[in-house]
Length: 344
Image (tube, rainbow, N blue to C red; front, side):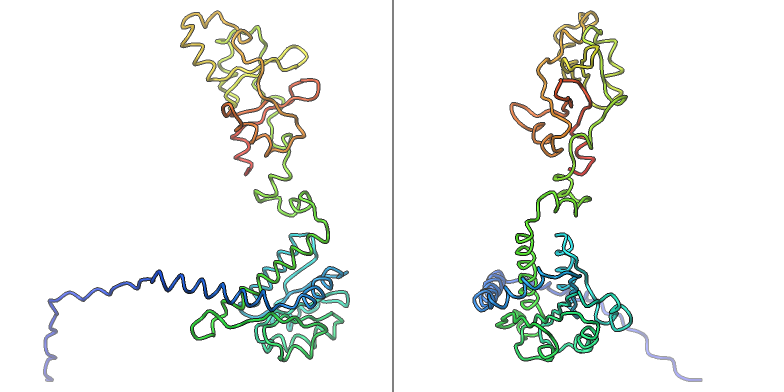
């Protein structure tokens, strides 16, 4: 029978907690200043003629502008392609690996392929370039090395001056990707200006976002109308209209005549003030006697964001605006809750 192992001795002392790492404020500030100096190097040494030729080439494109890249440069290329697409410029991202397995079929002889690469020697792009040329596409390299493998394979080469990476080992692509992004987005805005893109055209490409909604949505798109309106006549007694006041979710009554002309508004706040001042006398008061005959109003073709601004304007904010046409006929109501629900 073998001997038993020695008993396990448990330490009675608690492990010493590790001190969490801390960021030195002076060092952090120094990093930002250093990155700024590297970006300034890029701005001071970027070739304007080269950049102008690149931008004009993209602007003259009659096909799709494809962007490609590997790793972090690929992320930048993808982002810039999306920026151009949002500006109504036909643009897409072409993954270099997927391209060599069928996706290159999207390329035609009317298209441009822009390849972002810090070194210009990425194996995936070097393999992609001759295949894209065989498809008839116009090839452009955007690199931070003037002598590289892509130069001889492309029709146009753009050099992005890079002093060095902010990384202490000069390895992690943090400065190179920053200048790629600055370069691509600035070119995109230049193209936007050259094409005279309007706010309305820009908004049409962003219908789900707050930007698009604020530029696209009109009052008539978000207002309540017809049976949703809390309407009454000026001769109606206040107490007879409580259900109408509370059931439509607008916080008010819209007082109209027989032709649907707007006479005024009576709010739940007016109800409380009238009850406090008149007490039992409220049972004999009509809506017309206590309504506001000079309410803020808005037209159906005004922008929804204008309605919100009007609600918030002095002397005091309001929660709704009656919507009337040019003949003062009531056609709807727009509420602050409705604007917020619409994403504005």
